[in-house]
Amino acid sequence: MALERKTLRAILEDETTDTSGKLKKILDVLHEETDTLQNQLDEKNAALAKAEKDRDAANGGKEAAEKALNDYKAQQTQKDTHAAKEAKFRELLKSAGVLDKYADRVVRLSGEDIDKLELDDKGEVKDAKKHTDSLKADWSDFVGTTTTTGAKVDTPPTNTGSKMTKDQIFAIKDAGERQAAIAANADLFTGGGKD
Image 1 (cartoon, rainbow, N blue to C red):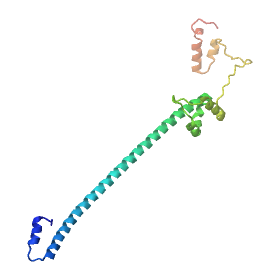
Image 2: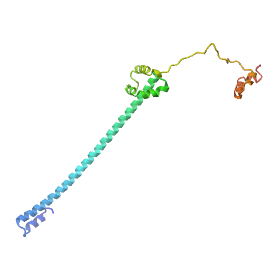
Image 3: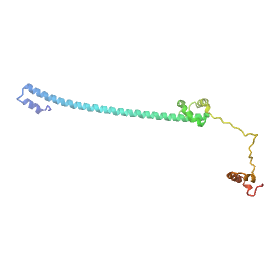
């Protein structure tokens, strides 16, 4: 019951109630109205607190998503940088003479060395010569060496381009080899060659 004029008038005009009873009724009506207003205020405060909590949770989720995105970008940048350094490291291995068949193994074993490489703004290795020399020394077992050996003079090749005779060709037992020899010495079988 709200404290309206008609309510107040009804209380004051009631002749069955004395003045202290009328005051008590007016106070009861005021207390009831105050309690109703307080309950409404409490509900609004609770709704506001919930809205703030939801907002903070949403902002926390947004912050977590931004952090996750930044972490992902940092990981991708690190992977890209590592891949670029690894490619340059492979180039250094090649220039140091490390054989291709060992390159993958050396790269796997050189993880820290790859990460220590510094690239300039053009993507080239800083102090490449120093690194190449270091790789030659560190991985010398994997550096290939080539030697050139000449033909032995004391035993010259047997086939010096001389032609075979018909008898030699017919003496070949393998049919495929015999036909190859006939094709190579076709002039013997076309009448242009001599026995």
